[in-house]
Image (cartoon, rainbow, N blue to C red; front, side):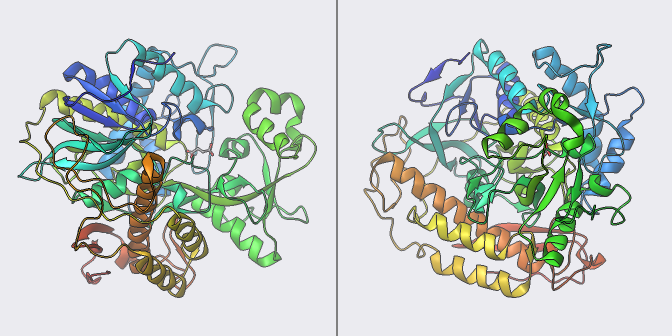
Amino acid sequence: MIPRVLTSPTPDTDIIVIGSGIAGLVAALRCRAHGRVLLITKALLDAGSTRWAQGGIAAALDPADTPAEHRADTLTAGVGLCDESAVETLVTEGPGAVRRLIALGAAFDTTPAGALALTREGGHHRHRIAHAGGDATGAEISRALLEALKDSGVEVVEHALVLDLLLDARGRAAGVTLRLMADAPAPVAVRARAVVLATGGLGQVFQATTNPEVSTGDGVALALRAGAEAADLEFVQFHPTVLWLGPDARGRQPLISEAVRGEGAHLVDHDGARFMTGRHELGELAPRDIVAKGIMTRMRETGTSHMLLDARHFGAAMWERRFPTILAACRFHGIDPVTEPIPVVPAAHYASGGVRTDLDGRTSVPGLFACGEVACTGVHGANRLASNSLLEGLVFAERIAAALGDHLPEPGPPVPTRPPRLLPATARATIQATMTAHVGVLRNADGLNTAEQTLADLAPRPHGRVAGDAGSPRAAVEVPVAPAGGAEEGAAGDVAAWEATNLHTVATAIVAAARRRAETRGSHWRDDYPDADDAWRGHLVVRRAGDGLTADFEGHASIRDEETR
Ligand code: SIN
């Protein structure tokens, strides 16, 4: 099952792919036709978000459906901020990409007649979500891609945190530095002609999230440090229905897929009233931001900590066949959805923004590409349509491979890099508490200002010196990379400090964008600016500026840019 895994990477390769979810695995497999490929992943190959994806993958696969209808639903969910050409690419190339995934070995659920079984989720006007194992779609996709990886010739390094991008004298990507989590004494450098970021999400910036522990925004932080642009970061999507495990719930929380509502479950308050009826024509299947707001509003109106999802009418047989994973997770936590409603609450789920790319996954740093959740292709706008993320990872990973097949860059030798000063690992808890308290589903100026100040107070002092034992990397090639100035000892402490530093960078970027966007749009909900404002129909682009970040508005002329930090 496991492909060839190296204990330490080769010193140079052609293409480095970072991350092993659907985007990373597809990019690695398809890029292999164009050169040597090194796939680097932070934990085990199947530890990322893809494996946890329940609902499925959206594409116009039903003969009665069309890419145009999928496009319309995607644009509606994105509330005026989708890049229409990116959406067009997604919906027209999507069905073929899913068929190639099936040809590669992914087994989706079928109807008794042998057709693909398709379900509905929020914001979709049609049944167009293909699923596998009932509610274990990501696990099946991950299994099939890992199987294909076995004989692909792709080299793999597990348990390695990529730290920073190596750049040549002209600012082109020339490789990466990484920290092996096994007992390696120092960072390692690997040179490459192109680097593909597929590092997934940033949900761990909040206390409670559907994302796994590894989703610490490493790709966005690395890209910002390397000088790349990130966009739409204020649009963190909160999944409406995460199993409520009490006020002290921390870390990855069990997801109750939107497909449960797609199959007919109802959201009710503690009196049994269906509060989404009348709020939107699609009721409980409205786009995700609307359902999350509906739940939060009803929680505030009733002074309660959660709402309820009632699917008792499914009966035991349907629960067991269609949603075995969710049923098991609920029962593990003492809830039996066959006999009682499920307590649910919104939690951080998906970054609709990320590292800005063109339609071939190119970032603003030559030779650096991005796909999957770490990327901002423009497909999602202000709010991702349900089950568009696996499709986006698949389609744009294929496009990156095609672009690299057309042209593999030839960067010069890497120039010396200066690692960031690291925060202590303990900063992680403060960052998460701050983001949860002030930058969650509901935001306002006071909270965002408090968050900005707290993050600024935490920030590592500007560079005056690089702490640590400078100039002694265990570099396989002559690349001057100093071990970073972390407070912790050893590889594990070093990695925890890098993660805290990356979370801090990402949190600072989200707050910078969220403070500026003085309106409510998609998953960015300001209670001091409750309406959408056409003047804000544009993007906040975050860039590095000295030791800080700026969030500049690209769009309507009446919004003036300002330096945020
Ligand atoms: C879900 O199954 O509700 C999540 C699917 C997604 O986030 O697209």
